[in-house]
Image (cartoon, rainbow, N blue to C red):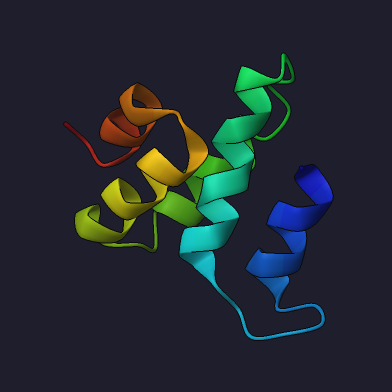
Length: 71
């Protein structure tokens, strides 16, 4: 999951897609790995609240997405 998030964040092998990156960082939490939380905050800082809320359902982490969006 971390590798997929970094690939989307950095555009490795395709275009940069920060919504998809944000999808994978919090999904790691659901798998019992909190290592992506710092990266999620960094990505969320440059996204709109709408983009963050788009990533939430994709990751299955709606509460985290809401917190990252500031609300």
